[in-house]
Image (cartoon, rainbow, N blue to C red; front, side):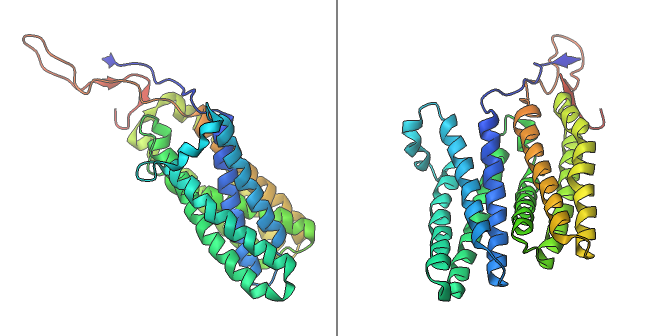
Length: 302
């Protein structure tokens, strides 16, 4: 027996919201790579600047999405309940520390150790920023594709993999592709693929709207082969010494693009409401109450 309403695609968040998760995740991951690069003595200023640009781009998309942009200051007023507020608060020291490290690196060449230490602190704050972003979607209980607990590790792994991808593009352009960056990029590529597989499996097992599962299923071949298998193969070749700069950059484009594509899918196309359902069918007079069904849902084992 079908009882309930058809899960509807949410219309409150559009591409601007997806861009916030794209910019913030990529920027946080890129900032981590910039910090590691600075500690190991590789060029880091360009990556740090790009990281701030990505985070700033994401936050500006949120500002544009607000119905009354002049009231954006209100986002800082609910840290006790809102992960979006916490995201905004964490962004302040992120920009301050990363900006200070860039100034130190450019204005005081002899202060490279101090600049690297400050950039390390900025990267740690960036990881906190990435965590806040991942929790924003996780807290949306009315959207099954967002409230699934397995989305949290996927968002974290994707942000780091996207940052790795952009870093490899920048490093390739500067002619400074480091072996450690190729190896770490390969690890993160594999970690994100595992998180992506687990997310889809958990959604199917725990139950979700059929339309949401269909969107993710249709995208799976492209995400798997173009977003993970291809960059992994390119990174292995680059680590073997075959055109490391060029192949590393191509792998980076594929890694970043796949993460951005998945985020657009999850925020826009797979984001269907839970709908309404009666857990058990009511009985009038004689009869037996039976388990209800969730119209438009895939329920494992039923």
